[in-house]
Amino acid sequence: MIKKLTHIILWLLIIPFATRAQADAEYFMQKENEIVQKMNLVLGAPTELERTSYADTVYRLLTEVLQNENSFYYPFNIIKKRISVVQFEDEIKIFTFTTTTAKDKHIYRGIIQWYNPKTKQVQLIELNDTEKLNHNDINKTFSNNKWYGALYYKIIRLPKMNKNQYVVLVWDGNDLLTNRKIIDVITIGSNGNVKFGYPVLKTEQNRTAKRLIFEYGDEVVMSLKWEPEYNAIVFDYLVPLSDQFHGVWAYYGPSLNRFDALIYNKGKWTYKKDLDIKLHKTIKDKFYKSPK
Image: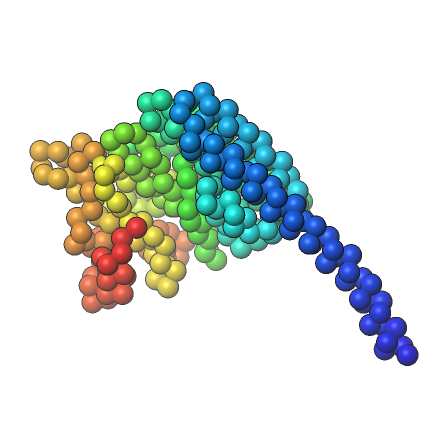
């Protein structure tokens, strides 16, 4: 009798949680579909004014949804068709999307959801795209209020990294002539302030940098990927079409026979030139066959 009563009590306790979870899932799916519909309008709008107006609506809807703490644990698979959503475990989630101007420049919008271990709450941090990133800004620090906009597609966090610090892989559709891929470092303070850039990366010249910026022609594709089994960020080595175009980034593209890497070791990211084929054959074959 006692055993049966215990089962009944447990069942009565579980039912409200299951019902709430189902209600949350239905709410999030409804909002996801609404956001995707608005993003479709952003992509199809013929004028900059219309695109901006629809994008503002998307941002408002997204902010509204993310203010619900349960959204931190929801996968958002539907909006991933139109908005970049990346997450590292139950620590941080980043949402970014873009619209274009009449001159084909990108304007980015972003929101970070971060679990603050001090307050034990999920914090919402808005990213304001007010800054222009120049090719040589490898040692400049940005903030969430003065952010250079971009789309985030990978978050990396390793055990010996500083607390509340993440390495991110980023794409920027810079302008009509070039795109960029960026390796950056995000640090979040206990007050929720975000800093972009931290001096733990090494350049090809073995100098310390806060970020690495790779710029290349708009018509080519550069591969920049995280390979966890090697603790390495592996990327195409970029070269100009010919010597006369040195420093003219629109004429840069992958060399196709060389891959470099940032390898994490003892709290530092060391630059490794031209990965050895014998030691890193798996990486080189993987990249050469399907660069992305």
